[in-house]
Length: 237
Image (cartoon, rainbow, N blue to C red; front, side):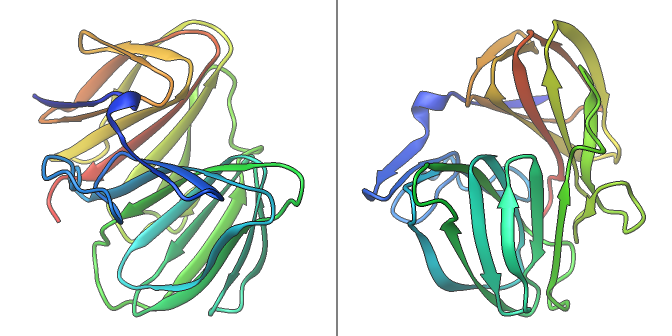
């Protein structure tokens, strides 16, 4: 078993005035050779965007991009013709494929927008770009993990061009759970959105992350009041 711990206060940070961001992995002006990626997980950015501000139109290609608003609302527009809002409680997936452009702004002029932006290296390059968005309300299960993303086009949630599975959990009560990996050779990255967990002799608090590979199963003790994101991803790019 191989374990990589990323405590919240060791992440990279950038203050752009309108944007406060923390980088789990090397990104933009932040570079740490020990933190370039974990398997195919390339980016995990924790952003706070000021009212009315955001990212102007910019390009992507051959990357799976996942956006999870934690509070507030994203105003999104892209070259595939999609234009609308992604709110707290929703998840967005864009498969950039052969190339897209898009913009992302805080859709409120009064409140901050907090979101996670995640990039995954794709299984196949050069595919047609694709967009997906859903509300997790119909997927949410109290005090249990629920699947929001998988490699299957026929799953209950969104799908990725990657042998990856994303699970979220919102725990009001203490729980001990076991996560069984879906594919041999994959690894898992746990990100504590808020609250605290204990796994593999490690105690993790809000915004801490842990990457684990070389396992088939992981046991997690979860404290009440915890929001957790589990990303199972291939370890080979």
